[in-house]
Length: 165
Image (cartoon, rainbow, N blue to C red):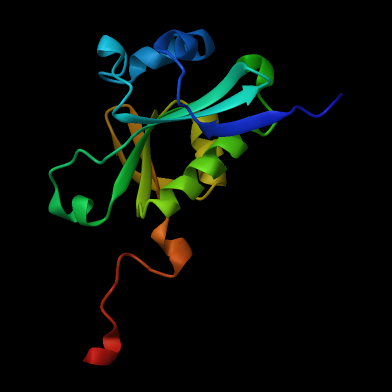
């Protein structure tokens, strides 16, 4: 089988219809996303084969949390990582997630979080494989988190050097 030529990049001109054709009803699970074509508040990263949309990541552009600690540590909420069924198990999810993490590092984001149903074991294992860990469980959901700043040598946001004491 021939290797797929997949291009990963930020979406500039895809419509909600294009996104729905790829991800179908999963788009509706993102609160407020499909209301009035409200895509400007989201980061949309796409995987294209030629001009066919085969996968995507949708995430909040900004953390909309009032907690001062969370706002001190910029956090992105990943809303959806989707790869069309026919293109799964071809590393497209990995390519999307890797590019997304790189973009978030460039933006100075400290953490990435995603909320998944607890019964979605395959998705949980996928994210855990890429250094996401369980932050909390509630109702039937689990929040997974990846600390990006740890990649820069900052551990648990400990920015005060002990040598000052």
